[in-house]
Amino acid sequence: MKQYTIWDNDNWDTGLIWDHAYSDIKQEIKKPHSKVFRRAYIKRRSATTGLFEASWYEITNDVKRWGSINTDIDVERVGKLSFSGAQLLMANIDGSYNPEDNTDSLWYGYGSQIRTLVKIEVGFYYNWVGTDGVYRNEVIPDDPTVFIGIISGDINVSDENEVMLDIQPLSQVFRDFPANQLSGFTTTGISASQFMGILRDQTDGSGNYIFRPFFNDTTSYWEITATSQNYANLNSSSAPDLHQLTVWDAIEKLGQAENFVAYITPTGKFRWVPKTVGASTTFEFYGVGLTPNRDYGHTIKRIFRYGKKLSNFYSRVAVKYVKDDTNTSFVNTALSMVVNGTNAAWNYGFRTFSVENFWIPNSGAAASICGAIFTEVSALKEQINFSTSLIPHLNLLDRVTLSYDATDSSGRRSYWDSTDWDSELEWDGTRGDAIILNSVAFKVLSININLDGLETRFVCRQL
Image 1: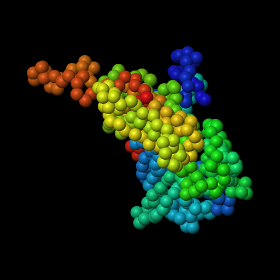
Image 2: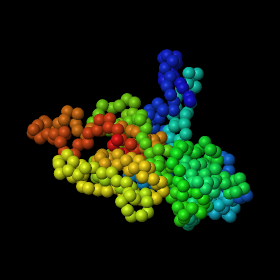
Image 3: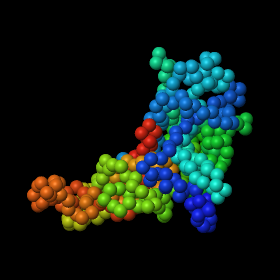
Image 4: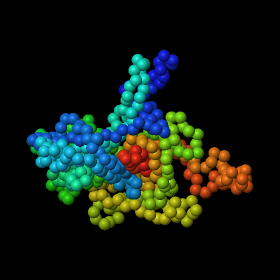
């Protein structure tokens, strides 16, 4: 990690050093003008071994349109996790993106274009002067990767010499593999974390890893939090619970049963972790009507929607974990219903959040899941959808704070020049549809990076 003086060491104390990795990105984000870069790379597969080449091949100069990338969790419904792909419009003047059997193609001599790895980087160039007086040009963040995926879908050339590359997130490699083709189960069943370990270590029977090559071909790109609950029905590849499921389907069912989440980070790492929000604040957002924050600046551009999210409020949670329709097949938790002006169930309606997951092994596990979901949905919380300047380093479920005040600092302002118009024609800024937030804590549920416009759009829910 680089450290360096904040000022020229001839004039200031060289002991004044700061952390390059985090402080600089805040400095660049808050600038009205920053030097931003976008880069795109591919890794092709050997026509012989089927494995990816060792180094990334840059294709940045051929990109005509970048599009956007999006990830979200719990936005429309608790427990719903989705990843969007990316679309890169490529210039094909010299035939570089023709099919692999064309001698002009970048893939000529390699394997199919389909399932080629694609990496997109976005970040800032930062110029600074070291203690030796030499100017340096740094890239921040240290790893500017915001997306890694695979080409998946039709690749068509056109008479306009353009090719659209449809790129799916890395979760697609799990969607493309049937769960009943896995091996490594034990006759007594396995835990959810053991299932994730099976994925990491899955081979074709000849020692060649199936999923690991997509994750930097190393175990360090798999973060698997241990779980203890045993799933006795996951005892063989022919287990009925795996029929008609893809590997990703199985991952989602285990995630629901454990109140965990599996996702791929922007840098391409697989994570199986509890669905919790960190205790420390990752970033602070500031908007209009406030004294400019010297550390984070004014980054909120526009608030599209802000308010209480009624569609994510439920007064009752019911978890069905046994197939039979009996009273003992369910675990329920509910708010008490009282006709009272402060009772949430009465004020907002008696709404039930239903979960049906027969992988949940017993009533104790079902009660734990029921309680965790109930904590999340039984209070009506604010949700905010807003755009900012480019902020490339945040992740889902990060804790952030928002500060915004749509009122005038004096509380009253005139619509007209008081010299020409009646000075009584004033508007009370503390009334109406003003949005006032003062370091309110939220968790990040959705991140959309507009790669063409170089701005980010977030959806966050209040903690």
